[in-house]
Image 1 (tube, helix red, strand yellow):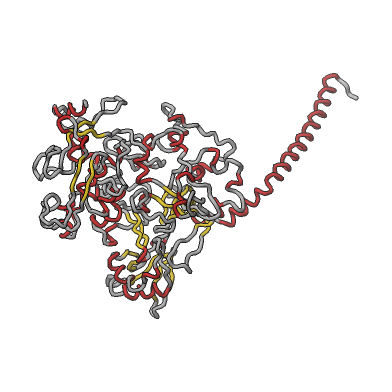
Image 2: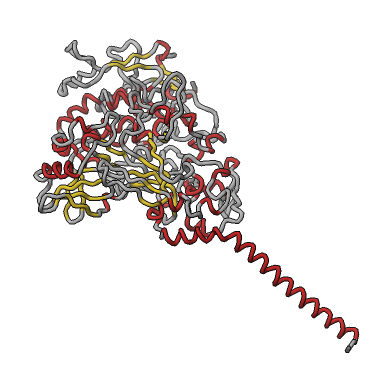
Length: 638
């Protein structure tokens, strides 16, 4: 209530700093009883929303939340600034993966210049096209507010109807269990199905319901979303629940700076596709059984009572800490240096001791040679599932729309992600990664590969890859080398002059020779895309090496000798690769070293016995020397 009173009376910190920009230090939660403000007309102040308005408008987070919090500063945060070329890209992370089974495509996209990714516009995705694929788990802002900057004039006009996808503050800060991000009429559906960008944040709130869609409305009638003369169309309409409006028609937003983990989980969940799902009560085993929540343990930090934001901290600029050791060089967040694994568990040698934050145990690593800290990241031993002979298929929220109504629950749906992969990272240390193998159609010139526009590709693949070849669950189509040759022939007239059509898959580049036959070649664009993971952290009792050295250094250890499956629509081309090749290690050397450990107990026994013999000999001669000295002292010459 205090916040609403201060807002109503116009109280601010100063002319440049807004009321909510600078906290007063209290750890209590402010009651956000404030007026809901609609998106203002150009050059106008935003109007307050009242229950009797006609039409009833959606509230604008930029206007409503921005009345007290500097929206422009917040919009520079990590979740929103991918489109800013001046922002350091940081460590390579999970890309957006465009997966399209009919064209046998899964390709990594990012607006950040991460090695191995491509810009969305390279495959023909405009801002609106990008939102249609991935806006379900974008918190707004960034590309969502650039829908009126498209090169397509029709989309610029369309943006006047859809509105911009503003930052949805409620996506993270709403602590109400009624926050609807993935429901049948919630945020995700409003964005990717209905195109209702202006209404998406309102639809996610617990006190409003949005019906209708902008699809089919006249692009040239900017009143169309609110007043439609065509009774067949159902333009978006907002229904605020009866108890939504309080005193002065203000609304109470149940928000907090202490973000609950469920808000993070909507975009950052993982689900492993397990073999041998359990039989579900009352029905046969199925795909859903493979990803039941009770089959997986939660991150040890969360089970200990920590919140995501305890480690991934940020202030008003929303510069979220990611938690990797080199982050202080990439981030302006001064807590980045003390928020990595080392920051909490080992602290630093100079200044006040910082180890033990949040009661974090200080690891002793008794008997662990120092070389491990030079060669391995903390996550290599402590993160992800315990390694097996072959990597595990997994799904993520952002790649597979987990949590969104109507998402494909099959474990075989594209994209196909696999882990844990132990590989050498950008920091030169071996860490644990998720991985997928790109597959896409492209043009190639001078070994430079550029993906083709997806619409162009579909025009060719639809003539070769028949519906009968497609999987019912969204898996790869059954693609042969003859099919690839036919598609490449069709694409030959679509590629730029001086280049040739190619297909990337199975870690190889497929192209046609002069005789029209498929040939394979190596190309960096065909390399698997990998990004390091930290979660889920296992307890120390389940870390690699906790039993003995042979957890890793044995001739059958998955850490060095596991297999990384090669995923591909070309069934004849996919062969597993050894883990050591990803680690940059010589498999033969590691095998010999591991084999030598078989004799390590014998070596210990021989060393101990040898030491005892040496000690016995030294003791014998020491006693003889003592006897000689004694005789000299007593003057006994005999």
